[in-house]
Amino acid sequence: MAVEGTLDLFKLPEILQLISQQRKTGILTVQGQQDIVAISFLNGRIVAADALNQTLEEGLSQVLLKEGIIGAPQLARAAAEHQAAGGRLIDLLVERRYIERVQLLEALRLQTFRLLEQLLRWSQGDFKFYSGDEVSYEEGFVPIAVEELLIHAVQNAAAEPARPVPAAPPASSGRPAPVRASSLPAEIAAEPAPARAAAASPRPVAKPAPVAFTPALPPVDAEVAGPFRKMRIEPRLVVSRATVWMGRFLAVLLAVLVVTALLRASNLLMLPFPWQQREREGLARDQRAALYLKIDHAAKTWFLLKGSFPDRLQELVAAGLLSPDDLEDFEGHPFLYAASEESYTVDPLERGRPVPGAGATEAITGNFLLDPEFLNVPSEPSVQPLVLLD
Image 1 (cartoon, rainbow, N blue to C red):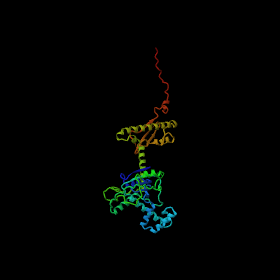
Image 2: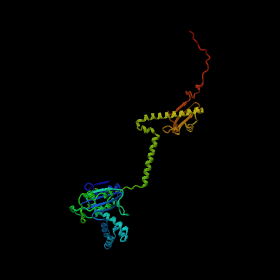
Image 3: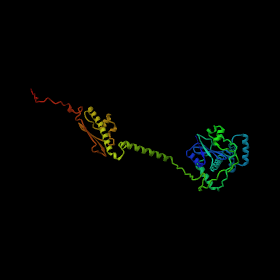
Image 4: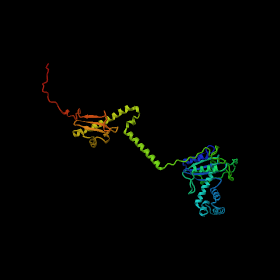
């Protein structure tokens, strides 16, 4: 997947920050009037940068000489050995102990910084980002954060005096040199050379001597047009892992409490509004009546089996006639149960006292299966019936 555009619409710092914030992996190619620069990103951090007009070894050699890490005679001797033996010059410098690998990586990072700071001066050109799963870079290279690069560039711009803007040289009519395949993702390298040159280089590119072809960076506080206009770099908020886990724990605890409250007061879930109080009371009565009916069926079944009502409701639970949840009403009130020889009463308790008007009393009277009165057959009447004869 490729994203492209022009530096007239999108400033280069904005593009770099977007890639950094989204933690992208891939290669960003930026084409100016005289050069093409490829920047490799790994999880939103810069791990390599390469230019068409200057190879990695050329730029690194300039940094090594300028910083005094290696002398010119030693570098010339290493270059001669490299031409004879082949391979990479940077590997030969370490193998023949001209420099240490730590020094090489530091110089490579400095060379990458300088190349990118020159790139940030561009105000015109085209860019294209190719996302991928991996990119190639020097092992041991410390990735460069985009914020670190921008801050470093702003500080250098503030320390240097403003330079006049030179006129842009006309584009050369020569044919552009091909970009090395190692600096490009697989989908670009797989394209034919003419198609890749046409896609990446709408204008012919030559390889002239290095020319300052872009305007200098403005001072930090100047309100002028440029790549750093109205750009602010804000520090990221670092949240500890303990804080994250504490937040998750509190969120789960709150969810459990809300679900428990809704289950304990289901009427509020179905009828949540204040003006529905009467409907909630009617629903509670219907639920309590249904539970009383279930208790009554269990108690009278016990009466058929035992010949009397149980002393406690827990006996009905032990016999499997009720469930443990049936010992409380739908509002969580436990039941006060009392049984006599022919009847029983059930009252929900609130704070140890029966709820007024919420209890129920049931008896065997009128039930032909339980009431012994149905079994008493009246004897023959002693009074003779009056017979009328016609």
